[in-house]
Image: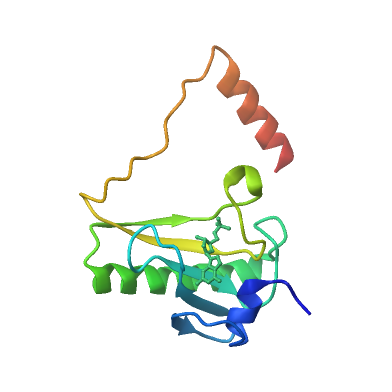
Length: 135
Ligand code: DGP
């Protein structure tokens, strides 16, 4: 039996507030929202994260993310929307079935953006070159 809670939600074995479903994707309210209306969009097939998910499946997910983002904004009267994906525990991933967070944001919701760092001399050039070499 799978220990994938999102597969169980898709199969109706665990309760969730579904907001959208199509052949490839499923969208439901996050149980512990940053703000009311915070929705998770998942592929119906299990892929662990951004590294594993095939381009075609990701493209289905992103099409649904756009649909859901527009609906969440209208339904909640949000001032903005964050789209986020956590990959691996170091980045905050808790559920290992790839998913995108659609988070409605409000001017007065109290959240702050992540802190920023400065590059040291020569560091940006070096890291950009390393990334280019991996693509
Ligand atoms: P992440 O940290 O990116 O892996 O986010 C996982 C999210 O999944 C987290 O915001 C809470 C949500 N979540 C975990 N378990 C359940 C559940 O059983 N039902 C619902 N609706 N959401 C869940």
